[in-house]
Length: 341
Image (cartoon, rainbow, N blue to C red; front, side, top):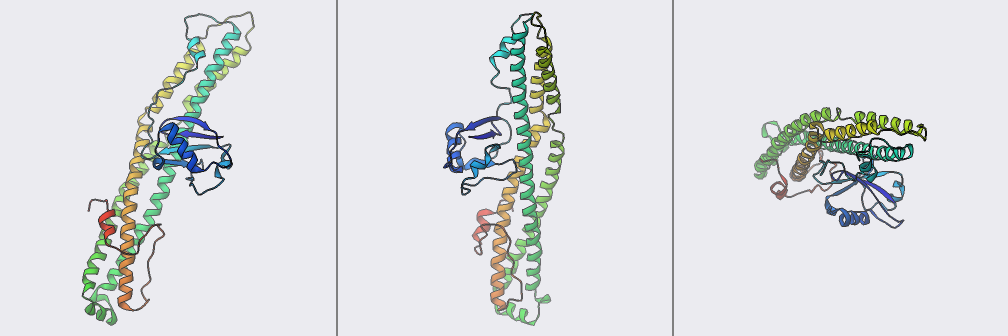
């Protein structure tokens, strides 16, 4: 079996798997049972590793781990109301003043079980938010390094192409190839857009740090205290003399306080702002990464052209470690730039 926590659906389920079950098979099960399109699913371990279908046998190593299931563009909980109240809890609410010890223990055990389950779900959700924050941090750091290199290297190439700063050989090349002026303009366009991307990243950095501050204030401590109080009530009930009867009022108060604290927390501004805020950050980072890759591909293309014109390897080639970078084609600019320039 494999245990999974669905973030936006705020629930934990268990699926049966075999030694031959692949990640793709699990995604098909999720689509069939939960209606989440396969292309919108992200299966992530508690260590923050996104599982890929090519990882054969990975499921067998997750027997004791809860796999977190993210849905693209969604971190907010679909329905924050508590679900599946045990029938025994409903019975405990009947207008009976006192119960015998056996019945009382039975009802109290149901209440403690329910609270434990809800506390586990809440902690799963907090962990899921934390992992999503870490994933955004990693993507942000990666693209920031790339954009800084893009700005630096496009600036170097611009200097090489300036007649007043070039050596005699470069001047000869510039005169020989009139298209150098056109290329210089394109490289300057890359440089200016690189600066614009850097400014956009600064805005994201500010928003990201504010969201992290809000996230640091999210805690399940209040619910944990109420759960502890419920456990104490159950332990006390275990010691009641079999001939006594007792009113469940103390446990009922804890139970309703727990439900209110749970609902207030899930609906709080901190939780809502953090969840929606990091989805917004993720979307902006996706746009910026697409733009960066396009500009980076063009810069590599123009450097190659410049090297070919110079007929020398004196100008160091610039490549960035982003997968999928093309080596030519201005059409990438038109198809991928999404910064509004």
